[in-house]
Image 1 (cartoon, rainbow, N blue to C red):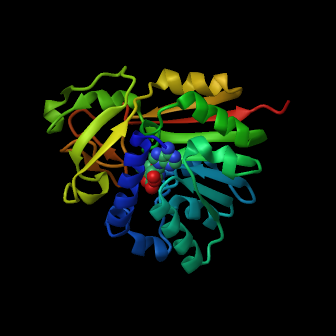
Image 2 (image 1 turned 90 degrees about the vertical axis):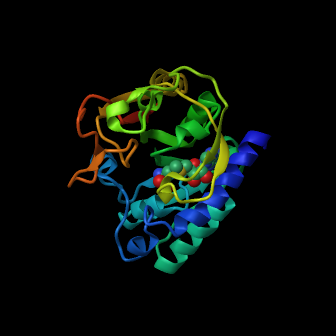
Length: 268
Ligand SMILES: C[S@@+](CC[C@H](N)C(=O)[O-])C[C@H]1O[C@@H](n2cnc3c(N)ncnc32)[C@H](O)[C@@H]1O
């Protein structure tokens, strides 16, 4: 593992400890039966009962376990040892069966065997990956013939904007950059700006790149949807609606915050 991945893995070990205590992840509510799966993936992925579901970059497994609660035969993967240890302990404590594997996505074919009906990944995953071509090939590798890959993720367009508040939205970052981009002295998104400061590395991936690597890996794109709302406040002044999505107040509907995509491994 190189210095970038090592730094990011240390970060995610530290963030796991912060996130376990955070209202953002609200572990006590999850233990009481509430989960954080959202309307987009619930409606688009539909009935998962009896399906073998592989969840890439599962963090400490709450969404993996939420799919398992809905009847999926779930396997979660993450490269943070602390995340996977916490996921396993939640699985045991709540008596929700699921497998959890500690692995870098890049190394997964060396440690996990078998095939899956669904490969799922969500909300804040792509910019941690440096090689998206390899990522897509790994997804295709684990899909059973006819199986689907599903992602719901931050829209890469949104990352070009920076602002202190909605009224000051401006172009702040490039859309095209290879990375790694070193991000210094920022707290976790889950701690409301109150957590410890950290340094980490990210890579940017355009929407075109995401689509093309999946096509290149032999998958057939079935849909791509874009949404003008976010899963959390991305800029000051955004408001959470009754539907739990965060929207700009003055410029609602003008900017894509999320996308979802489904692709299928054809049968031959
Ligand atoms: C923002 S979280 C995933 C979001 C998840 N939906 C959630 O809200 O809990 C990103 C996850 O990716 C994991 N991760 C980052 N780079 C990875 C890599 N190269 N291989 C495996 N996991 C990785 C981190 O440990 C972290 O748990």
